Length: 160
Image (cartoon, rainbow, N blue to C red; front, top):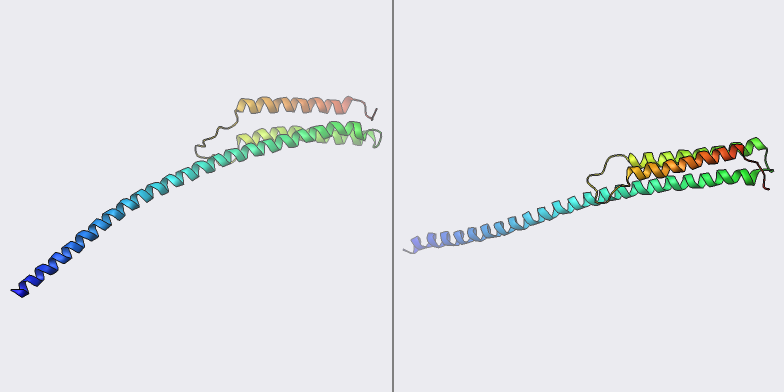
């Protein structure tokens, strides 16, 4: 009889070990599922944040173009007054004209870069600038640049 009891004892120990291993596997599967869901949520959030950064970068680029255009406009108009009497008339008019024309280009480029920033971001949380606002503001700035260009061409030169 002792020989018959030994296989039953081994079978019982092996069965218990298998049950424990199955329980550990089940717990590990649950932890793996939770970790996979967290990783997926984390990847989705990183994608959303990247989309937000793309929109905000496009707005910074727009602001840089407008800022450059405004500075060029101011320098082009100022060149007429400050360079008059120092340089020949045609140099003053050409310098002012180029700077004011560059300002108009910057205003157009700002809208173009804002509307077409490259690959569209996937569903950003932040809103883009409204197109109507872009066209209205930059259209007004382009008209100001045109008026300044006419002023550079037809106004008196000189510091007086």
